[in-house]
Length: 222
Image (cartoon, rainbow, N blue to C red):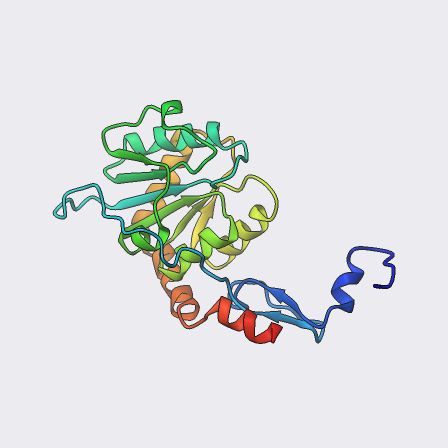
């Protein structure tokens, strides 16, 4: 019973609400938005995840670097291997989450790196000093909500646009998927040692922690 469309984009014009699942503070400023468009923030999806504890001694003072390159297959195996190699020569603890797309047997982890299939981001991000990510929106927004600066290695889809916004806010560095372990290592070092990245991420966190994307989206739908 719906009218025909000349273009899929006409659906946006005909909908009573178009919900943008990110913060207006993270998106680029718009000179004008259609009256039916709302930025509602990003719903975080790991509430109720199982408890998890860091696999290092509590007195280990090395900074924690979290690595997450999507739970889905996005051709990230080669990139992940380079990231693992980059961590090997850094004085850090590296926690690498592989998701369903990668197997631990594909990688040789150095002594300072732990490979995990899954870790609730809400459990580890309060301890992280930096994160290496492909810039899926949910993951990077969780990191920024915890004030964690980012090394962005976008792979597909909206990820290059997301990475561009991280860089525009001064909260991280963007690399290319074919960068070498040495280049990745240098980017991680910069994010860890140059205070501007962390300061920018924490400024974003002050905004994001006041938003509730799921609640705002539900209210707009109602």
